[in-house]
Image 1: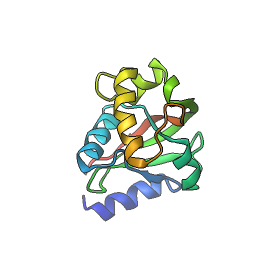
Image 2: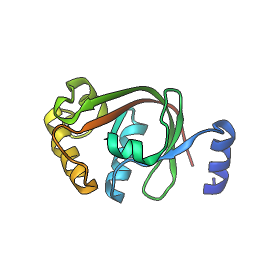
Image 3: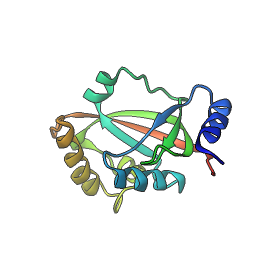
Image 4: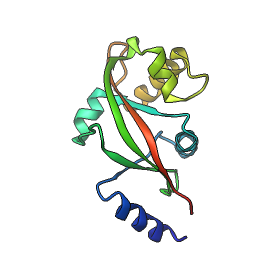
Length: 141
């Protein structure tokens, strides 16, 4: 199925869905989109500063089309819960839901510190928005 045709079908089924792309490199975007489609990654996080600055209001029930590095849809997810936690107080449960590496808090903090440093927002006491989601539909080409 052609890309534009596929996107049209998805938007007809989920008319209010926005797009999500996880990660800040093509390699990471593809890896994380794959973890979402396998239902290993069921949460994501961003700095509270970037959340507020974006002006986008992520609320429970919002639907998002997850894109890979080529901007191709991989699945559709629905936001199930939002958490506001300090970076230094990330929980084992939420780190596990992020689905990355060995899924530990230590791994989460190492990788997210690097990410937030690249973003220019890192501080051990920074606030982080953790967004839990559930895959509700897969996209097949």
